[in-house]
Length: 189
Image (cartoon, rainbow, N blue to C red):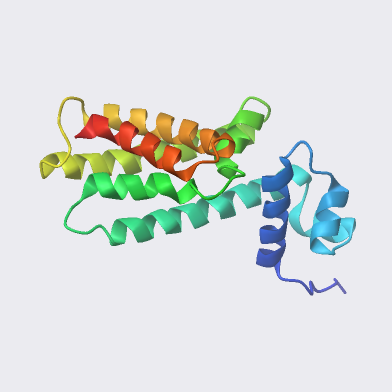
């Protein structure tokens, strides 16, 4: 008779995500995951597969949380203020001094593992599509200029969003980070 799991998988993924986010994939040992979850190695392997499989689950969970946060921002877009909406999206990472887990993964593993690379490319395309949609709406309503196409601005914003997230790890002054966002977005006015 197979053993029944007596732990919450979602909680384990949250605990493990915190470890990967704090230490990185490469520096996280299986013992770190055992310590964080209180599970034994065989339970982790039997339930989640390899360390890489578990990392992918963490990335997907983190992505889902970020998408939910962005969706909440989009739903609260007041008075069709699209630049303000983009600003709020940039600010989602401003208080996280560990940086965005997905951007951190990009710098660590994009060229190391095909499955990670594929996930990151898909995430990047999703971010471009999100920004492009926001920009198109802003351009249609006249709040964002049409000097460039929505796609060109979207690529620019995704690239700067990634750099912003990494810079946020090093810059400890929130006013400086807010100033950077205003400068980035001033291109759209």
